[in-house]
Image (cartoon, rainbow, N blue to C red; front, side, top):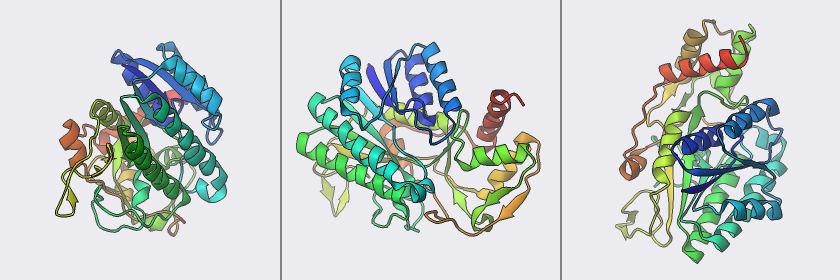
Length: 335
């Protein structure tokens, strides 16, 4: 298949593009090389991809002409749109970046999908859309009316924008609600990466809500398995019975679907830190603080819909996943 992957210099996009190329697909990448975090890490990912034979165009989603040029050259049958401005806390500092990438850029993608009509358009959403919902585990059937960060609000907007285009123009689309993804080549702004960096520098780590938090940690290899499994699974409208869609997350009127991509389990934050201590061989110095703005205490994803659609079963537990990350981290930074 000819596949366009946006955000290929990013964490998930890098792993996905590499996997698709290894599987024999014709992959084209797209990334704006945002300086939101370490450009050197993004360059290293791109060098790895280009060595593997994946061409990556460097342009911005807001540049509709450049985006269209890349699209025409790639002529994709499937599009996996992962490019976005990520991060809950950064959305408090620079909301304009989220408007540009997650709203304007996303609308540019939708216009290209409308014109080209690929077989399937898959796009990144986030578990953050569940916001203030305290009913666990989070299911695609739950309401998402109370986002607690601007980042989450833009992602919920993406889901609604995609649904409208899917309905109006009969375009198969799948929104993927990623939970806390971790692993090799990860994002330096995420807790597991920041913790490792501080611990190996003998510096304290900051732990929110006094450590009383849980997360559905999902290893990046399981995330890639889920996305690859969803690619050929194009949605169709599903009838509503007794007020409930026959398939969770699927629209009754449009070929549009929302799917949790998670491990289906949750881990206490302090247990996660112990895994890092064991894998790095370093004891963490901890500064406990209160809850951060825009954050939530618990996340936990119901993956029954994903499993039903693709046969998905997560393979990597936290102990092994953190060990893989720690080994990569030491190797990458020459420690």
